[in-house]
Image 1 (tube, rainbow, N blue to C red):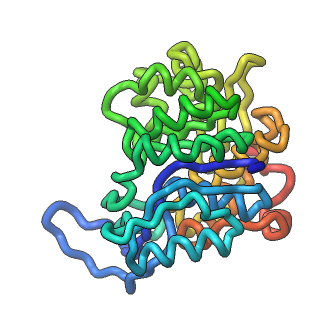
Image 2: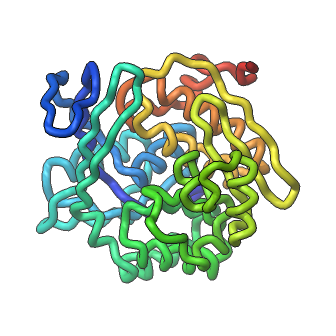
Length: 308
């Protein structure tokens, strides 16, 4: 039995820090290249496992050095990598990341083996999906595989946490929205998917719930989050920290949220905890290397979020 099964991507993050981001046609000098484990699916699995969630990952990696690094990082976090498929003929997914002095990042992803994670792979993992309390999904794998995983979870009675990132150009498939409980979106994704570019977080959340999502969480960076479900909406305050690198912070939030929902928290309670995990993640460089254990979270981030 798992708290969380993540079906999604695993990428090698190749990170360079710069004094400023280059403009079109411009070259700037950066720091030495840093290689670390990433990918939205693998990030969420690592975040869930590091805070004590019984976690498994279904993903595809290549039979290369990056694939070995990705598997090692998951094992170190405590994730069950039994469902991971190693494709000896493929290259692992990679993400090229530029980080500016404020900790904000720009990312280009090369899917690699992630593009081959198929509905057939999902079907073969039906029993694993049924053994999880929560299934966490993102959109760095083929859309048909995401839809297949959501349908398998619905059949099994497994709760679905859907983070539609990268945000699709078109509207989300109705069958995906219908099982999202919650749909987890950042401000950019909320604007695009809600169709309300000039609205407020509450308006975006209402629009997405009207489109079919069972519940919605809009993450607001340092300002916390807004949650909306059948009980109403609630603002979750942020935590004041000094941001070093925001890479993977949203994945840390989602992994933590899924874990606490699996453990029985209601949505606002789970989001309050997830805000603290996301805040801790931005205080260190990298994605998975920045994710806290429960002991580190207690030591580094206050139990009560800062107000104002």
